Length: 444
Image 1 (spheres, helix red, strand yellow):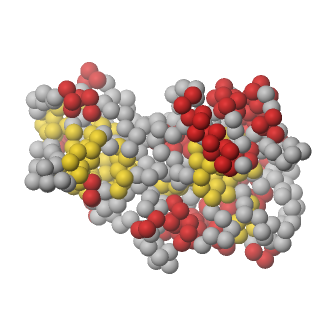
Image 2 (cartoon, helix red, strand yellow):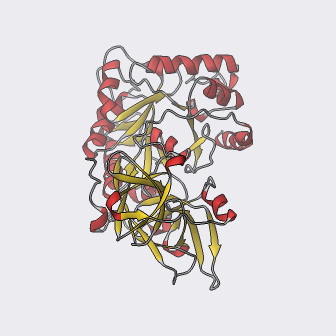
Image 3 (cartoon, one colour):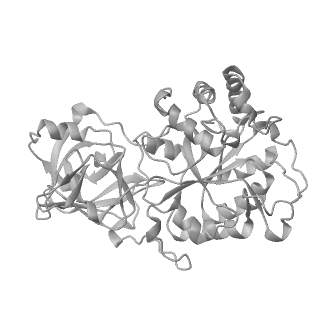
């Protein structure tokens, strides 16, 4: 069945509805093209940018670097950095004459790229595709940066071309990794090993012990657990995410998520998305029974919101037909739309921004995709296996499964950008930032 949905998703990719601009909140000022001016750094300077949840130091600029900047109201100048804005102190800049870039350079600077590089250690940035060219900056570790194009110099060395503050800049390809996508992990049911009698051989049931080890690995290895709002911002090219980013999703809304997953995630300072079957929400909490599939109550859903973002897993469509096929595939677009919209309305008591959908059993077709768009969802996830990259169809996003029998080492390799580089999980190696990159930007 998964093969059927995979082929269907590929067939639908080129004929999907366009999306409206998302309501992803941003604290960054909107650049004013009329206020732009060129300035040059008078000394080596630190620049800051929002990455994930914080504004952090992201690079060290060399003295004499030309930037296309605009002033903001907090004593900084702003400029383009990756998908968002960079900030630099005003007292390290002086006015400079604007350059006269070639038409090719102008076109490149405005290219909407789908390819990204990852910095796993501090990386040098040059003024030209030449290791002897002037050094412009040093990028911090753990960044995800859009690539405008690629070049090869006269020695055969390959380079990645990026936009750094409104100018072309060059990074050696052998110093970075090409981004293979952001993983979305899928979970359903969680039970302690000693209590699991009925679901021991069900692949969608994870043990509490294994889940605790998996989340400890993510924390120790430096992964940021991101929200789907952040993922949407990244896919639209207006949000920066770190190189080590992962989204956690839980389908169905089972009580075991409240009982076991919630405290583990809270302990680790991690976040996740809960896709809820809105018709199965209980009015009052049920006595715990590990031998049954129990659903969360109103109070339990409210309790987990410090960790979980509540999104939709449909209302009445999470069912199988008599021939064991998802009933969604037998419904008209009108009926699917009615159900999708009803689920959004039912879940607004927990979250006024229900914008994401998980198809029941991963089942979707053209009618379901159209209905998701019409119902106001911005993205939908499937059971197709893979990672998420810019340019992917937002209504057929892939996910990854960590099976009940998988070790932490298997999970680590599954989510890694290059599985062959994963060290033994007994000693996970977090990204260690140099002293320059460890502080947080002062906001006042």
